[in-house]
Length: 375
Image (tube, rainbow, N blue to C red; front, side, top):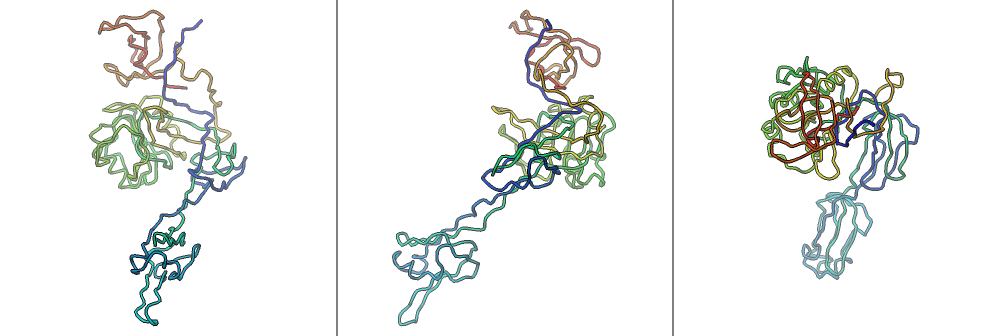
């Protein structure tokens, strides 16, 4: 029986059946039907969030007891309010010395209280829209919430990302997987594109890409100082993806001057010109989320859809990435999975595996120091 072990990993697949759930934060209307073909930027569901509430202390503004406020109101609950409308007016004395209040907000008059003298105006509803993200077909409808979209796609997971969903054609900026992504490699015709680099992306290259209007950058590594310079603050350990920085960044390997894995680079390079959807959202604690690049493929594209059996299992020949020094970022294949515990340099015992590096060298390392590159 072949030795196997379980380990988490990043998926890099030339063709897989990919499904995404596109769900509204509140109940709303689903705009598509099962079986519909959808485009990445197409709205598939929408809803309206209640607008902001503006309280108005009418009793204080008109210097009257709260119990008199309802009788002085010129608008009733449920009425539409526009800026400049007179909401309330006092009767005055013999029709003279009247006071009135003119609205400074627009919306709907939600309530009038004779107890507090407060008037509540609810602002305009806020539209919420969910786009398909993945160009494909609607596989399932979730009533009043959204849908599930499915497509055959090339799929690459990164190790870290910044920024949310973005779209654009893939444009290669590096000639080789080990080429750093520098400012001079970013050209004006990359506007709206998903730029693919090689090794570390520099802060100058990031700023140049943002200036030309690129949609996203994908490269092997990044320096934490460049992230700080790009964002303007230190990034915490919480989930990323909500940063409004005008550009989505995806790192495929890790921090530092690390080249993109050859296999990942070759796959992205082969997809140049195709429309991609990317998402930089990352979470490294419970409920792990990885940034991703998804490139829908036509039905007649070469290659069979990859299966999902045995996902996450290490076995002889499986491609892995080393995630600890002194071989951090190196790519190789599992050579052997010895069952017995191995004494490490620290004196502790752990289960290990043999990794045959792309250079031809073999190293013995703890199993916890690798992650699977899923096929």
